[in-house]
Length: 100
Image 1 (tube, one colour):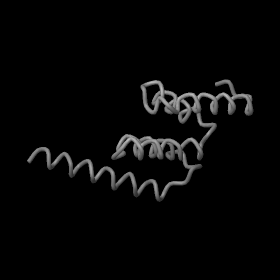
Image 2 (cartoon, rainbow, N blue to C red; image 1 turned 135 degrees about the vertical axis):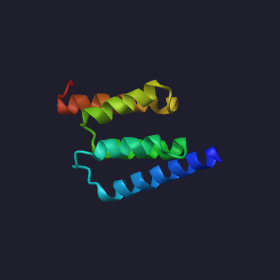
Image 3 (cartoon, rainbow, N blue to C red; image 1 turned 180 degrees about the vertical axis):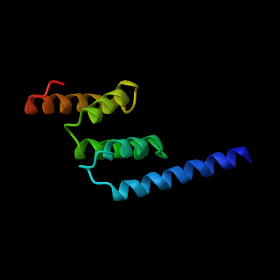
Image 4 (cartoon, rainbow, N blue to C red; image 1 turned 90 degrees about the vertical axis):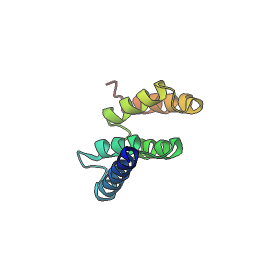
């Protein structure tokens, strides 16, 4: 009973965030927050990784995106891809000249 209510709430949250993702544009101020919410509600690691990958493509120079990505990889998410991410982030920093 309580478990069913929790699952329904989780599914309702997923639907709400999915609707927000369809409506929001990458240049919108809330784009990163919505994507991070979708990441947190992902049903599988593969889905979560796809969300994070799309977020990095859409906002590669956004400090919040870089920090969130680094945090997820540091916490052990997709260790086999960590080196590729580090190389990509270093390349972005070298190209943009942005050190912060």
